[in-house]
Image (tube, rainbow, N blue to C red; front, side):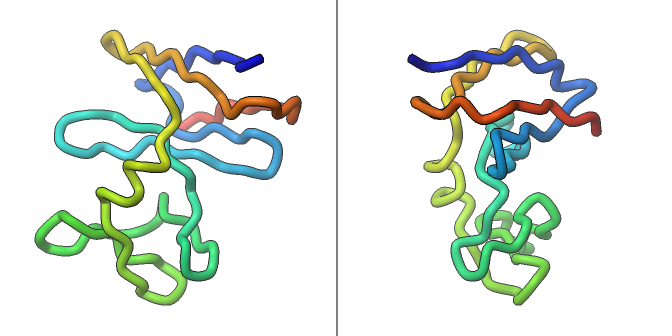
Length: 102
């Protein structure tokens, strides 16, 4: 059974589910909750800078470029209404959940 949380996006930008961190990525005018994990060596993509064309994130650990489109595919299901977002967490995980302030 899936778990659902409600986030205030004006106050929160990170969710911890056990040891997995997700952060709010703004892309094409949308807020998405994506995994904070570079596929190269696990660096924190929440600290990445966008490339000048805006299509990739540059990992802060090794400079690896990760496509925003690929990161978007890792987003959790989320419905947003104003600053409130309802997020469906990964299935089958009873890990503790923390919503972290900006």
